[in-house]
Length: 119
Image (cartoon, rainbow, N blue to C red; front, side):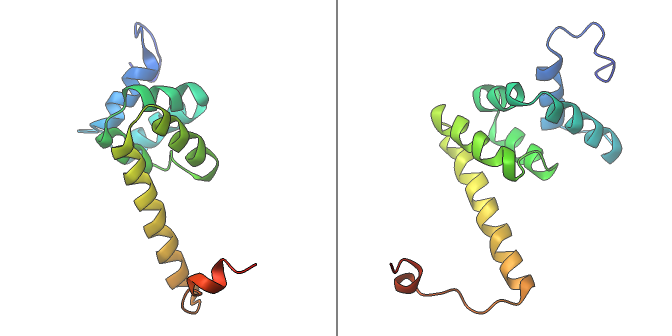
């Protein structure tokens, strides 16, 4: 019913809340719902910031909806809505994924703070 959009007055909200609690949804259906949320663009970002819970943000991030080009816009909207729990979660997630990427890339130890900010 959510895929067709018939008889659903708030389809985007229904998709977001269904993805928040994906009980009984297989991976293929979750991906299809995530694609539909992604297609909603900025409207979805605003709704997530306004109505989303930390669990919703966590589930959407796990589905790849908080990717690079959407990440900054979503963080800013969450910050404006004073949703610091969600902002902290996303920032920590990004920090961890960046640290894992550095380790996987075999890079040397990070530069000292003094050299990092030298003019």
